[in-house]
Amino acid sequence: MQETRLLLIRHAETSTPDVFHGAESDIGLSAWGEHQAMRLGENLKDQGAHALYCSAMQRAIATAKPIGAACDLTAVIVPQLHERKIGPLSGLSRETGWEIYAESKRRWMFGDLEFTHPGGESFADIRRRVLPFFEELRTRHRGETLIVVAHGVVIRVILLSLLEGLEPADFDRIAIDFASINDLRWNGTKWKAHALNQVVAPSPAKPVA
Image (cartoon, rainbow, N blue to C red; front, side, top):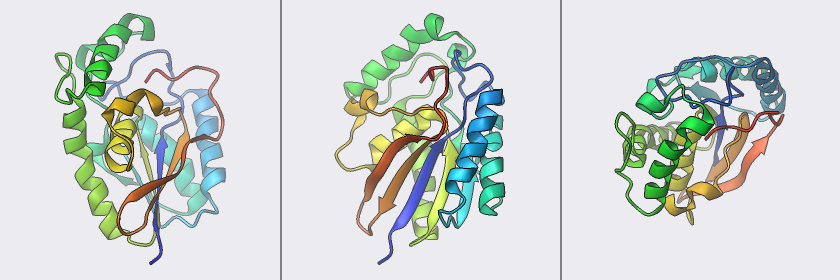
């Protein structure tokens, strides 16, 4: 049976990459992010993709647009793929908000998947929101290649939930850089990672989360 291939991509660099941006912060891309999105299109144009999906947030749509143009695909908007809701953390600088973010991450890594700060989504909340969509995709695109453009924390939750041998305790082992490609394959029984965090054009700025 032909494998189903999922190319799971984090959006390109945002206009303020040194700030936490959750679902509450719908910003676009930086000039470098626009360049990254173009490079993603160039990288993916010969991959034979059958479908393209992205979240409804500006930074994901702007990343998906040149990919769609290069692959001759129209992006299907999936609202539930939005970034983690982080409430008052959204818009804070990396330095100011880091302790709030890190506490949730620490608790998740120790197995408390329902924990979150006030106004934020937990690991379990995100998993309940996004995993049904990926189960549906696996059935809808059996044996095909599909591209999904989403967000950093959401992608970590997906990878730690779908891939054999990974669990929430591995949260810090999973790097999700701007404009990175995670190449997953479904062999009829389970998802396997063919390649993780392939970056087509590294950002000068370090991603926040």
